[in-house]
Amino acid sequence: MKKLCAYTPEDGIQTLPLMGLSLCIVYDKNLKPYVFENRCSHKDRPLDKSEWNKDTLQLICPFHKAIFSLENEGKCISGPTEAPLVFFPSEVIEGFIYIQL
Image (tube, rainbow, N blue to C red):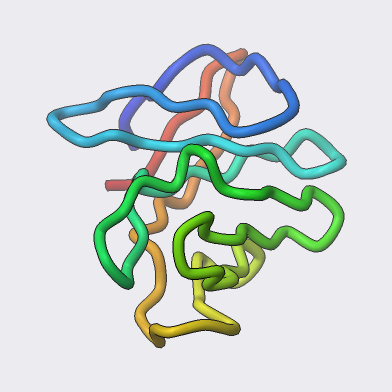
């Protein structure tokens, strides 16, 4: 597990760099974090301006409207691709978010 950042839940999509990657963090209604690469699996476009629904755990790409389920580790459930997002399992430990690389 790799320490990513302090656990500071907020609405919307947070972005931050890690080891040359741009990552996004979102939180569900219970404040559980979900971490994924800031890149759509369809056309490599950034996802930081996506629509995030913390109740359904779905992310909608702003470019081609692909819908990704973060409940299912970034699986694409609708849209122009079948490829999932690059998803990083995460865990909160002592006030920090850790991800599995």
